[in-house]
Image (tube, rainbow, N blue to C red):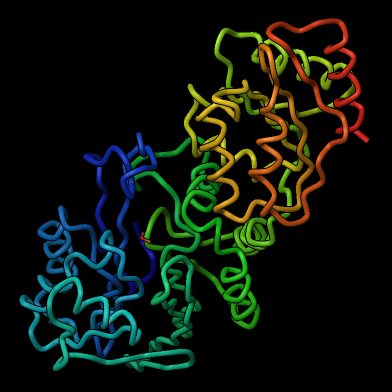
Length: 386
Ligand code: FEO
């Protein structure tokens, strides 16, 4: 990966990983990015995951070509980036470690030392001159950990954005969907809860001319920077990115599924251009979460279960609520063989969400759909399309 004459890529690709952060399936692997800035002083931007320390140090050594680094900048302490700080410090004992005050506290928890003799503590507005390059530090608390800093290199106008603008997938995997799809799943899976914090950083970025974004995961973004910033503005404001209706369902014997499919058919017949059906048990949970945030309207269809709602639906709603799901229209389809309670339960679970408009029409099925249920679905579709 070429960044510039002075800035080299020294990161690694992980194809052994199955679940990133223990929960996000990554069938195309994961990249842990690290960068080397060569100037009168030499800085390394972040380390990599524990399993790739040797490869990272080899990459570094090759690009250093006999020189030694002066600084390791630690923008984020999550272990996929921080695991090799001690190995670096042992290999390059003269190098200083540049990070936020809180990151050094975390280093003490992680390594048993906060590298007191090597510390350079930086905060908002701190600068580090390397020669012709200058690192300008920007605090980014809770994007998505509290100690995070980003770094703007002002001579080449490069934003080192920590986890921001990252995506799932290794860099040697040529993603046919480009950056967007897996960047969106990454954003809502990992950063979704912290929209206000992302907005605060985007506000600071407004004053910067950015030519390239070097994130800690995924490709270097080196053109159409406004486009990437715009996606982050939409996502962090919890605005719908696309028009459409997501129908997320759980079904035990197939009758709730039939109702969900019927609603999809009615919506399409009435002119809705985009309807997405999601089986919450069989489809990847974080793809479903991504779609719920991507589109403006959501219908939840579930069986009544143990006097409440089907477990996978409860889990899905909890994922949305914990990520500050808001500014959406939500409708319900419930099935309850002798006493439907799912819709009431789902609405109660969604109560903490802000700016939600619940559809007045719902479909309430007892075992199998009736003609009356079809009328309910028609009314729900009309209301969603108003
Ligand atoms: Fe890529 Fe939050 O670690």
